[in-house]
Image 1 (cartoon, rainbow, N blue to C red):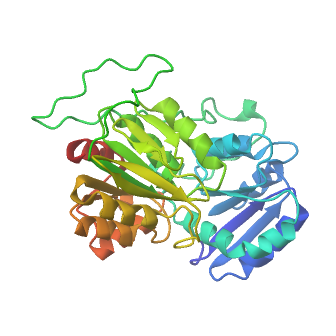
Image 2 (cartoon, rainbow, N blue to C red):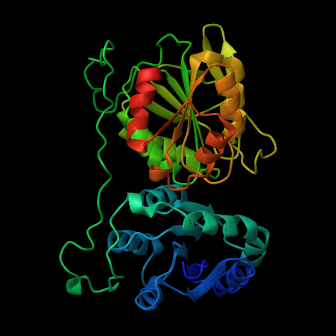
Image 3 (cartoon, rainbow, N blue to C red):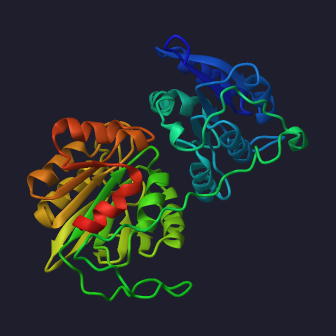
Length: 386
């Protein structure tokens, strides 16, 4: 940032989007549009002169697609990226790839009516840009001391510089003294825990938003199959959550699915609230089910973390563990306070490892948090207290 201004580079092959988005961003205090270009090749030329604080990126463009550019950018110099794209064809999978590659957030847009879309969604796009500007990119790949040249011809780039790092491997949670690790053999390929297991009274509720997809990809794979049932709200558009759940399921020892109304919450299983619908926890005998339903946005979100956390406070009380992780805004903070008041143990991701510390910060400020923990330790804390 220069003089407190957020420098934004727009990379989109739609002249309408470039024009309208430039106008809306320039109307926003503290934001300066330093460039608006039609494709990644022009973006690279621009960035070799002036490096932006935030890139707003389309994915489907001529000459080089946005996903390829995103991976190249993150390997050379990690920079906050807001993806705003129509996501046709493999839309949900492409969005997951973009988030996994380092995009801070993905905003889906329609194929037609682009001017109207940008006009009506301008406040959300501006909020995403502001949030991205504060993203903790330092937690990923070290930034070179000078801005390296971006060049399409990989032969002129030093060997290894453009190698995209794979996902970090996170060790399994340490086992507290007096508590044995799950000694069952790993699942056979393609198999998951038996869903016929009798539901226990313990339950883990997790809420997250911007940066949360990567955070969950650190926490959930580190949990053993003996973990109590987990319910999650990740702020994500409709159609994306099913693909995200499938991605997590392939990474985890626990069984991860997108939640459907009436699903049981069982040990060794994770339910992810579907995009565009709220999810609540309901007490059923000695266990729980989820209620998935339509309703107005809460804190501008559907699903809302507050909706889930408040229901967990009511249904599970002290038998629950609440976790709030990276995300902008304050959704979940008040719900986590209700959980703590009801006797639940509560955890917030610490500022140093958050992409955006908004949600955890608000929860801490409200007195809703028993313990702050870095991302790499959250699975261990869940294992200890769950």
